[in-house]
Amino acid sequence: RKEVEQDPGPFNVPEGATVAFNCTYSNSASQSFFWYRQDCRKEPKLLMSVYSSGNEDGRFTAQLNRASQYISLLIRDSKLSDSATYLCVGSFSGGYNKLIFGAGTRLAVHP
Amino acid sequence: GAVVSQHPSWVICKSGTSVKIECRSLDFQATTMFWYRQFPKQSLMLMATSNEGSKATYEQGVEKDKFLINHASLTLSTLTVTSAHPEDSSFYICSAQGLAGGPRQETQYFGPGTRLLVL
Image 1 (tube, each protein chain N blue to C red):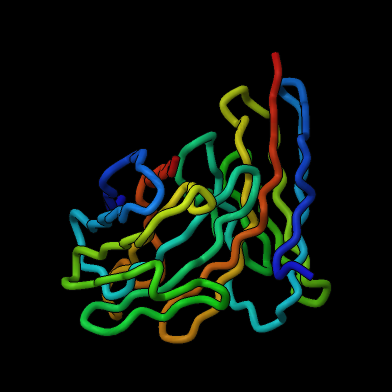
Image 2: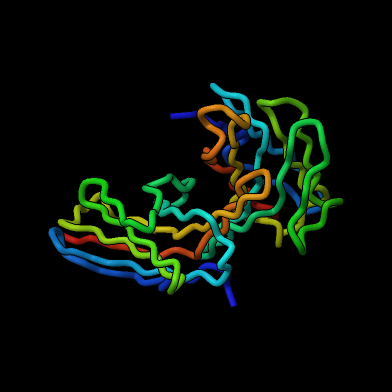
């Protein structure tokens, strides 16, 4: 079983739609979680950290449920520029932060 | 934000040759650098973790004699793919984490990646 699992998609949505991505993790020792965005043939870029209390950054809302080992990302009012692959990432701290990446969920926003 | 560079950005080589990829943190010192590999439509897989002045820690299944890592300074780590073969063709990405106690200690900053094609 993969340590971080995501639905690969693709999610094809019209501009303005709300879309939600889910992610589950198997290692309860995971300490921190993040959502990264990766554009085609580019490096991943940090989108936002994820906290148990839930956190919001503009149109993006992330949530962590440690009891269910479940992470979510909600994107409201989708823009064409949101089209990318969204990576769910867990972090294990052992002197340094080891990141475990999910395979990513592809989002395609169309006019 | 912090800047991490990689060189070269892409390389094509013949089977059997060795390829060196450099990863530099340009505006901060990095205690730890990470090397990842990503095959098409797959997730980034951590290959190894390198700490300045010490031997790299390799993930299970990654051959340390094939993927040589040197972290000679706080701003430079190199990955050498020795005797590269077509199956080594991939997207290699490094990341750098700032010094413990510093403002960048909790975050990994990614380089732009290096595309390797072995013919």
